[in-house]
Image (cartoon, rainbow, N blue to C red; front, side, top):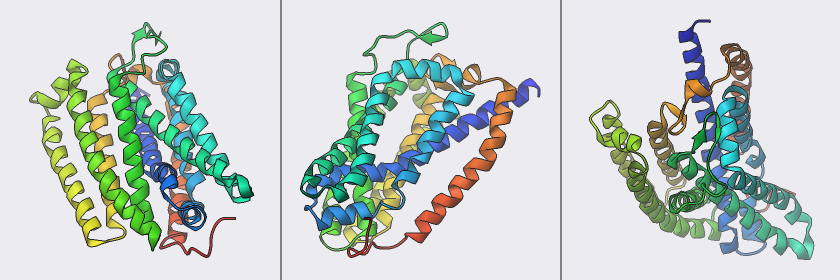
Length: 339
C-alpha cells in the first residue's frame, strides 16, 4: 500500500478510536452519574430502582473503553507509550474507581447489614472514575511534554488548575446524564429527585462548559489560532456555541414540560458537542502538540490487519448494544430487578 493508503488507514483508525471513546463517555457516563447521585436517594427501594435501570447494560458499556484503550495500544503504539507514563496516576485511579463500582454493584445486593458500605463504594468509585477521566482529558488538552520519542515531563504534570476544572466538569456532566437517565427510566420519587438534580447540574454543566471553553484557547497558540483565526475551522467556532445553546434550550424546555426522553437526548447532545470541540482543537495531533496521527501510527500492514478485525468486531458490538437497549426500553418496574 502506498503512502496515501497509509495516511488513510491512520486517519480511519483515529476516527474509530475517537468514536469508541465517545461511545464510552455517553454510555458509561450516565452509569457513573447514577452512582454519584446515589447518596441523595433513600436507602432500599429508591437506590435499588436506580441501580436496576442500568443493571442489564452497565458492564456492556465498558466494552468501548476496552476497545479505545486496546486500539490505541495496537495501532498508535508511540502515542500509548507517551500518554501512559504521563497519566499513570489518573488512569490507575480511574481503573480503581471502576473496579470498586463494579464490585459494589454485585455485592450490595447480598451484603445485608453491610449494604451501606457497598453503597458508598458505588458512589465513591463512580465519582473517582468520573473525576479522573476529566483530569486525564484536561492533561491531554493542555499538552504532554515529550523528550524525543518518550515522555519528558514530571510525575505531577497532569495535576494543574485546568485539569481540576476539566475533572469537575466531567463529574458534574456525568451527574447530569445520570439524572436525565433516571427521568427517562423511572417514575415517582426517584424521577422527582432526578428532575431537581437535572436542573441544578444542567446549569452547572453549562457554566463549566463555558469556563473550559474560555480557558482552552489560551493554553497554547495552536488552540488560539485554531479557534479565532480565519480558517476552515472558524465555521465550527461559530456554529458550536449556537448548537450548545440549542441543546441547552431543549434540555430546560423538556425539564419544564416534564418530558421523559428529551432531557437525556439534549444532555447527550451537550457531550457530543463538547467532544467535537476537543477533536477540532486536537486535529491532527494525537498527543498535543508534538505527535500527529501519522507520526504515532503503527506500520501500514498492522493498520490494515487490525482494521479487518475492527470491521467485524465493531458492528457486532453495535448490534448487541442496540439490542440490549431495545429489549430493556421503557420504564423500570420497581417490583422487578437485579438479584
